[in-house]
Image 1: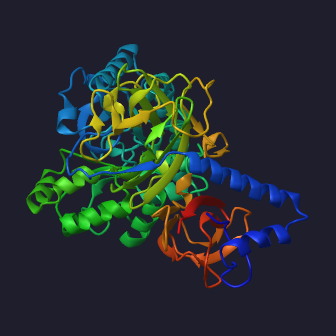
Image 2: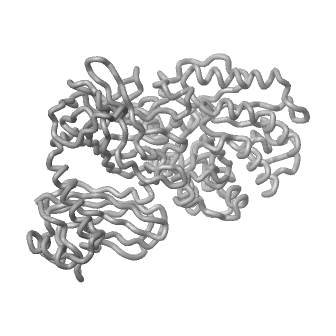
Length: 589
């Protein structure tokens, strides 16, 4: 294997082979840093040559409609009166709309007995394996009274301990409180001003755990409250009120303006705005009547653009019947929220105790949205003979796996030095991060593949044929006491860096003659995409300048300055004003 070619003007590079090797040392013979980098590269090549071959596993996509947490159709329930629920998991339902009907408390505080009833509702949801979309309201129709802002604030203060105690089963909170049905219109206390809406929203956000989001009824409410600030990828999931505010539409697909939902801008402009925000925040609601907008073709297209995560399974019955009769209901049920499909994986055929397990995988989100709440990603290793199990967190954030993206990741793990010889299984586990739910398989994410889901454990099995053999060549650390990720992704403010800022992916990898590189831009921005060698020197410039938001694809033919580049490891480097991302590719001629 040769050395990646250094940079020279043009589509940069030099000829492969010994000349390229010689030029690096002649050009940099007085530069100790670069010599050391080359020596490190040679060391890496020597180590990689000792590593056992990888096995590639291709996976089949499932067409099944199945339950997954925090997404899909929801079932309506009155939370304080919720003492029992059917087994909604069998109906592929994992959400309930938990209304707190506070009509009797418009002018007084909640009694302790009412708060106890609310807690019982949360307990029932937890026991049945579902989560709650919560809304408090005082009115069941236009003209009925709501509560004063002062009373609303006291109620939020009373609810705060329950919100903190039950955050594990709270999916999101609808802003509620104001006006008819808590939909922020028709207030009898004059609360329909930007100032009042802002005060109540911020009070509710301050009472909620920082990991939970609130959704507001119409897009112009959020623009007014946040002074037209836009949620960019740089601010996604940063804990700010802006990043924690999404949208719900309770007259979805009803007409040109969805019954007053779109009143400041055209429907197309509002959908564009909401779609930009809901890359990182939730969107959902319910339909309220049949229209041409509710017909299957448009309905599915709008759900895609709006990143729709949840809808009412009981309303509007005529719209639901339309979808069933027209043949799109199955697709909607599958694609609401996220739907993650494992395309393929490459992992070591064998590994020694204390050795290195290579695990590469490609995953595609074919749903309408990404997960909006925190979600862990874990590699699980299990010895087939004894059932002993160890796990290691993977430094990736599934909330950044946006719909339409196929993402490729490469990871290496150190095995425990005392791991038993024989065969082991490898699985991906996406548990709920909350301690009360982490071990409950009903709250783990199931990948949309056939034959890999283990319902009793809540894991997605990649293989059960990993050979653990002490004779396997490669670096070994016999003192290792746990399964751990090697060289984990850099942390930003204590969080894993978000790979989906650019969603950089390359395939096939390794490649022989041409590699396809895909990337996604969250917004219009200037970028520079280039191939570099291990010294960080550009080999070929692939793209430069302003580009539109969305997915882009380019190819590199493995040539530099018109000549074939040497076999070796190269770096794909994407840079923009918002940051940069690197990915490794291997050219193997």
